[in-house]
Image 1 (cartoon, rainbow, N blue to C red):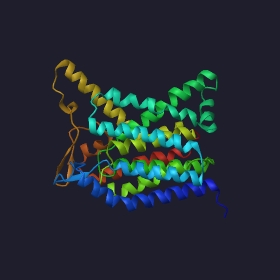
Image 2 (cartoon, one colour):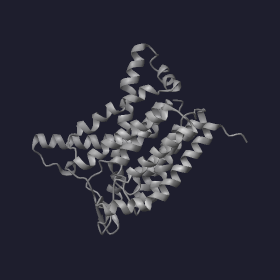
Image 3 (tube, rainbow, N blue to C red):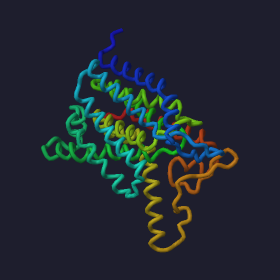
Image 4 (cartoon, rainbow, N blue to C red):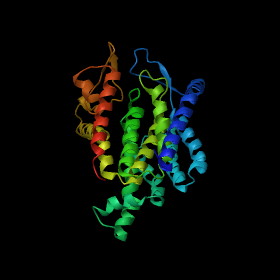
Length: 333
């Protein structure tokens, strides 16, 4: 059986990044602990402190694979892809350590970090746009500098928001990356995907220690890094519509959260008790199950009606995303 060089690169990059991350995780956990980079796990009865900012390891592994790509598949496209993801990761570091309070800054500043995507957009990405709007110079500029950067920004923010449980973000992102790779093979668009496979392999390996009971958290740096890489993957391949379907649970989570914020603001303006629209970041653990204050994020919705363990709630989120991703395989664009 003949395997194309592109397919070989995808497999090699995924496997090597997976192995590198697995090998480096124990030492990374030790270093983060000794450096005091730990946070409480609020969904454990003992509120144990868990090392955070583990996304640094994913970023470092991807940078190693970027260097290796010069040997396997020398392409400046890889450098642009990693640049975008790393810039989002740096913004995640700033958010972690400076505690940026301005939500509009957190949402829209990363938009400008996505601009380099205009340098590497593939013909099939442009083909997707032509099916809906045509390819006039005005529409091309709009796609280059508005649609594509905004798409990446939105995906990165939604990935960051749809997290909070052990293994939730890393597991969901691994599912989406896997189906994006499968879809790429189905439509025959496998060129220049080695670096995306590296993100997938490193993130999947990280999930093995991030799942319940987690021994390391990714932090904002990890969520922003992976979210930006995922958004870039979708735009790069021209999977704009199927990407929306794959990320439908993330979108629903964002809409629910936005509704929560709006209702809370209305209560503040009218001086009425906020009730379930008050400011809540965490639920609480009771007899091994999680009790949540409202139903206004997707991960809290099943817990609001049926108290269950963290592990079961995460599996429900996995099932939802796997379902939407499977449907998206058969959507043309």
